Image (cartoon, rainbow, N blue to C red; front, side, top):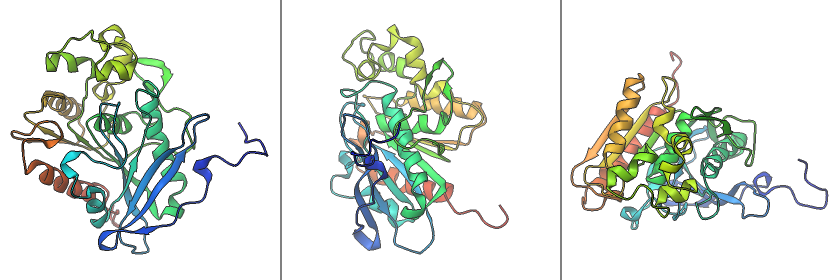
Length: 313
């Protein structure tokens, strides 16, 4: 649909904000609209760029946690309240696009995935202006955001196998460019939405759980929708490499969720790594070193997976 002549163009087609200097030569573009939604606030991201080398850089899309109900692009979790993990990754040469998406109080599934895909498409469509390489885009998320990052890696350009009529790509923001990512990092994320209640020993029919609020109903009452919203349902041999990191003492999203996901990926022949941190609860609570170790491993993994191809590749 074209924009009426008396209205401005959509926010995601507007000029980029001024670049701000950040730590150690990194730069940030704050509050960049990546999708305009009629009648709603524009969806925004903050883009953290490495020190300028004059060459296009890889980028990872970061999706925050909060049970699809809370959170924002400004935080990677409470363990990093006194540090800036996005600048840490940018200093290593990988840009970070930290993305806001609609929460479950604003819209139910699959709106959250539609928004995440829109962010990837926008980055590709504006890559030349942003100085990023459209062929080297990864996804990274924590908790609910890790769930969405996994789905970004597993559902590019496809309908859901469990519910073929439901389009997972969506029509939010820029359409046309691919929403595919070439690697996924998922921190303490749900991989099987319907199994979370059994894994935590909670009431599977409780309409107030995070999963029920995401889907609009308890997962057990909408099994096809729950399967559609579960990364483990979409694993195929075509999946990109995955790094799954989880605390062994996680009480909110038990570590068995990542163990099952890792097993499914490996069974499909996908390159997948699983890292467990002994004694760490959700959001790395209870383990002083887990947050640092997870961030360092994530940074190293992204650098390796998104390295520029050599002439022999």
